[in-house]
Image 1 (cartoon, rainbow, N blue to C red):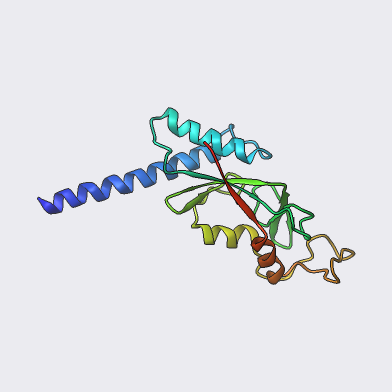
Image 2 (cartoon, rainbow, N blue to C red; image 1 turned 90 degrees about the vertical axis):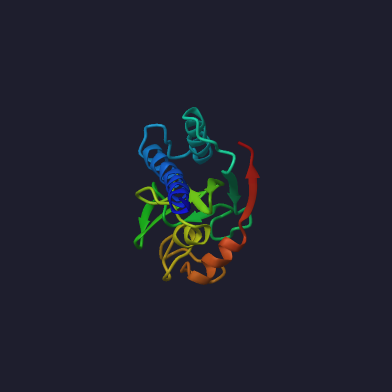
Length: 169
């Protein structure tokens, strides 16, 4: 009997997780996604969940900015953007601000990558904002503080300048 109760509890937790993942994937490919409206996309997703009777109280919505970013000219440098332009195998785009949601330690971002993917926060930062090798982000004639290449160290410095605040939903 205890085994049956454990199996039921475990399967309902698994089902709830896969339900959110399925909803995320469906919404990612829906016509409700707009490439320049990350906050609207996240809040629209939460509204969609609520309209289906799914509790969104465990979701945390975060707004990220990088106002002191010298390499991003006051913007965030995204390297795995769904709508970015290709630069040295990265999909580069800058954001004045960016809004994501966190649910059970997974990041929900409709602007991330070419396909829906739920990652831990650390994995998300690594894949979205950090370079693995030096790249000419703005071309060979660009130089900032004597540096032409955007390096891993500079990308880590860039991420450390992020300002994060909670958004009500």
